[in-house]
Each structure stands twice: as structure tokens, then as C-alpha cells.
Image (cartoon, rainbow, N blue to C red; front, side):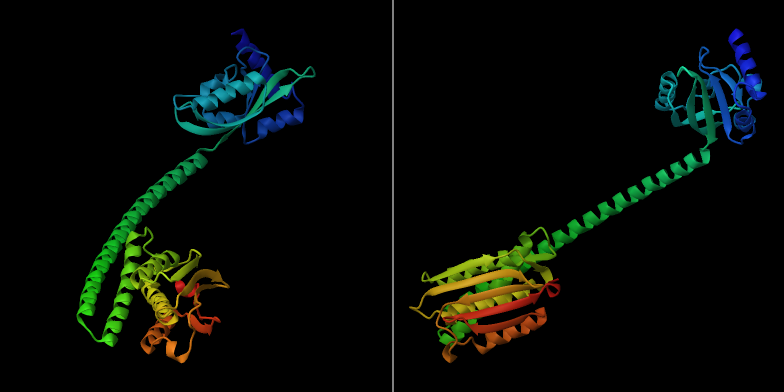
Length: 368
């Protein structure tokens, strides 16, 4: 009771303009911001002054406030961490800005943006605390709405991402199944061509069947690689060339021809894989067939690299060269020309002295 009376007298002196400079006291009384002053020299740091804005905010009368600790504004919904931070700041005599859930006299709650500042005497001891209170309930409600909306959007994004992931997995599985079936069908066609090739005796017809068999096998290799790839949209050119070289050298049975590979990783769109494969098959087959007649061995260089915005594919042999008798067949040239037009690629054949060099330039943009 004595502490209350002393706090009341101190509050009356502050309200009357005593205890602090008059202009400052008048400003505290007149401001529309809720303000409190507590006496840090008394037990439990009681309120000694509350301005009208504070009384309007909380619904309390001045007699119900003076002499009490500010904790009477707290309630069941108060954040323990925020309350602990306030308690520690008071004990340490430090400034603090914190948002607290407080309660009015009628029991309604409001979010309080509290700013606390200590006032020290000449000896450096804390004698008062000034506190300002600002109702930020609308701001907190807006934050909750934004957070709820963000959570809803995150859930929608997560659900949509899950749907798209499932759709992509289904698409990938379907394309793999298609590639697998096409590969099997092409292998069946290859078997039929091989069987027919064994039955015919005409050398020209046998050569034509063998050429067609090589083209079918090239396309089958494309679908095998697409079936094995995790990325159904892209086709690894270098990996395909390794497979094709192995297949061609195995079927050619020429131990006197060495193949050197200099392959940079290059990807093209899967939709362009088949025409590209046929071009490479035709050029490699021509190098083997026309560059190295029986009894004339040598070397073939196959290179793939990026060059000035283009994919550069080089096939160079040191065989017999490009005299009239050893030029590629007209049908083979027609295939290369038509498919290069489809791929928007340029190609040229030059004398490698000795042998033949073929360069194919495929635009990077055209490979997508």
C-alpha cells in the first residue's frame, strides 16, 4: 500500500509537470501514442504515469494502472519468448523493441509494439523506464493473411509440381516404351533384310540390301540409346558414334583399319536423332567401303566438337582418296544431302592428301 501511494504521488508529480522538464512532460501527456513511465527504484518497477492515450488503448482508468507492474496486460496468449526478452531487458537496464500480445480491461486482445528505454541518473543508475505502446493488430492480421496465403500458394505449387512430376514420369515411361518397341521392330526388319541378303546372289542387290541393313541398324541404335537415356528430350551424339563405330567395325571385319575417336559431349534434340544418325552412318560406311578396298588398310578419324556456335563433326580417312572410281554412290550422296537440309546443316568433302575429309556443321540452334 505504501509503494502504491508513493507511485501515485510520483505519477501525480509527472502529470503536473514535475520530476522531468515541463515541455517533455507536456509532450508525453498530449501525444496520441500510448506512453508509460515506471519507477525502476521501487520494487517490481511500478507504473508511476500513464497518459490518456494508454488509458484509451487499454480501457483502464488511471487509478487501476498506477502502482502496478505492466505484466497485468499479459494473458494466456502471450509469447513466452517475448515476455522473457522484456523481463531480461528490464533486469539489465537495456533498450528493447518487441511485439507482445496484450489484453484490454474488457478481455479483448491486441498486438502491442512495445518500445522500452531506460533513464539513468548522474551515477549511471536506472531510475525510470519510458515505454511507448502501439496497436499493430491490423498489421499482424495482415501478416497472418499473407502467411496463410503464402502457405496456400506453396501447397498449390507443391501439388502442381507433384502432378507435373508424375506426368513427366508417365511421359518418359511412355516414350521409353515406344523406343523399346520401335527398336524391337527395327531389329525384326534387320533380321528379314539379313535373311534376304543371304538368299540373293546378285552382287549389286546384295550391296543394296547391306546398305539398307546398315541404315536400319543405325536407326535401331538411336532408339536403343533413347530407351536407355534418362533424358528423353536429348540425344548424346558422341555416345551414339561410339556405338555405331563399334557396330560397323564389327560387321566389316577389317583388322587393318584403325578408328581414332576424338569426341566432345554434344547433345541434340531427340527429334533430330534419326536423321543425324543416318548422315553419320552414310559417311562412315562410305569411308570404310570406298576409302579402303581389300588389301588397303589405314586409319579413320572421327571427331565431334563445338566450334563458333556450331557442332562440328569430322570424318577423315587416309585411304585411297576421291578419284572418280571411288566416289560415294549417288544414292548415298542423295541421303546425306536431303538429311543435311532437314537438319539445316552444311557439309563439305575435301581431299585429305591422302584420303578424304568430310566436315558436317550443325547449327547449335538447329540442333534443338
